[in-house]
Length: 254
Ligand code: SF4
Ligand code: SF4
Ligand code: SF4
Image (cartoon, rainbow, N blue to C red; front, side, top):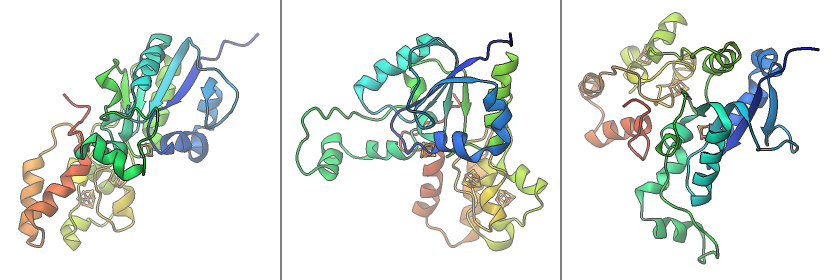
């Protein structure tokens, strides 16, 4: 009889499901790693399965925007040995957190013509506002390197080593042309976590920071560099940094 495969669950709160999609459909090199788990609950991949634990590994995507989700999240934590937040929505609030910029009633009024019975949307929160998280798989959606690191570390019972350097490093390794230096684009790569393989600069676009703030990032210096370029207003510059912290002003770094 073979060894027991670790039991895993993938849970979704308020988000676009892109992180689940990324894991299920676009990470072909992860196939063998995924096969090493028994995914007992992954609604996007299978309509069967149960959210009841225990789980050796739980991945949670999405922001918390409704009271019932807090209860669900706490149950998931109790049932999980290891729990990772996956994607910007879960880690910094991401796109769903934009609604925190306006009063709740105003947001509801914009979304629904009439007040819906039972609607209980609240100010968005990241998942580690409510439960302890064992790791952060960054990105919108995450890249294969950190996904593989999270899953393989869970299999080996070790702490994951996520990328802790900037997108610029990946850019240099890929021998990309620097769009900040050569084209004067407001690239956020110097202060953004690596993990995407410098996807945007590889396509001659400036990074906008979707992998979140890099440790020891020199925000002040990059803002100064953008000012030196001479064609961005202070508002433009602040808006560039908005994506990095999200509407909640959050980063996983304390
Ligand atoms: S982090 Fe990005 S890809 Fe993942 S669920 Fe949120 S919006 Fe979608
Ligand atoms: S293009 Fe952006 S990420 Fe790449 S080296 Fe230049 S500043 Fe860094
Ligand atoms: S280059 Fe920047 S914005 Fe583009 S995918 Fe990577 S981290 Fe996200």
